[in-house]
Length: 241
Length: 330
Image (cartoon, rainbow over all chains, first blue to last red; front, side, top):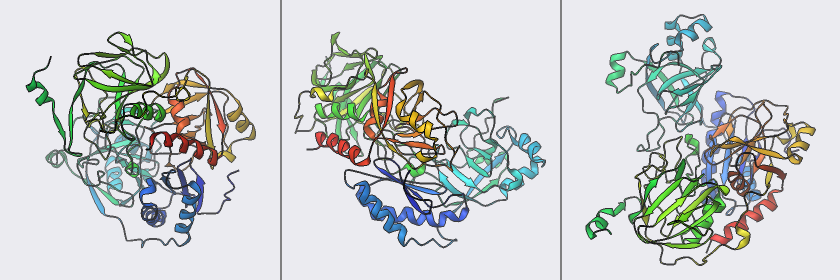
């Protein structure tokens, strides 16, 4: 019905002011090497007519001003950009960010549950989570909320059956093959392992978000003393929440 | 009566624009939800920051236009009513959008037209008589420090608004206003065709999206022929519609960017139209996207109201959008 065919990449209508650039079907770490340069090229090619760009795991949503650029003209430009798109070198574009993290039952109330589900000890869960260098696949859900992967298969656990109403700021969490840290208090259904002292979203910082799509991230275990010294909030989760 | 000293203390300098501002109103009663909205926050969605901006672009644009303000000026979005403001100086203002039974010193306030308000007068919004969201624009615009390029108030994200922290209006707040532009307004009142009767059943133009072919034939027929009801689970993030259960062959997608007006269908088969404060990415299949003006129209519907979805072409929708903007440019 969309007349686009199944071939990738392809453009799909996303309303009067948007095209969805669909580059891949499945989540793969190598997708970023194509999505990131496409994002940069759109910025250059659309200029003032560009309203917003939303890169995600397999797609790039391009939002333009339809008063400056007709949807047809926007489509032509995107097809031209796709025509000679070349991937970034795998090692390029991605700072390594370290997130100091206090893994503890008081701020990571799902540690025991994850250990039980995976058959690992709590220590092994922590080692496994902190032992992987993750890639930021997408930002969304809330300002500065970075979806990172891929989590070690041994740590794969489902989301909570009933999401928590309030997940504390800076909670470090896992779900499926992904991990994240909550930049602000929101509802959330991921499994909480601990808390980071990093400031994930700061309106006064250049770029605002600590993490950007393509960044590589390592969670660095710290003890309570170091966590507090870095300004970490040790307020425990309420019992049973 | 205010002393000269008090007036001098009211002066606030907006460092971002270096624009001279003064206090225009004091909030006597806050009501459930009143918030500042400019055109929205753009260019930061890739950080997970939502668009914000007026839920009803039409009412917001008319209020500003009648107050003599250029496109994008910040106005107050008043949801449901219950707000009482006291003017701290003489002001030129206009209220458009919903009829929330507004009064000025107890007298019915005329909507969709420019009104003069004197210092000390009480502007009160009671409750919805027609529509859900009223827009109050004041000549010179409301003034606040932009956050990430915009003053649009997003409560959930803690961004924008008068305090920059996404707070809705609270009792005792004092609201800064800017200097009116010298050009002034060209129209005193909106023409009849611009004044929408929000109680009438709404026909919402929708541009079909890429997954429309993944819905069953019967579901597609129902989507565009059934009468939908606006659910009470409705806010600035999105509006849930209840009606026949729609079936899609795909249950969920890999999360991807969501545009304004996108109509997503979760596994329960009941569509959700996503509005200005929607999450930036999501993974439910979509019927398509409401046009910007259709999303605005839906934002004025009260729970229980009837709406219909109408598939339209991009060409027709673009022409309507251009006509709308031409009213406010130049």
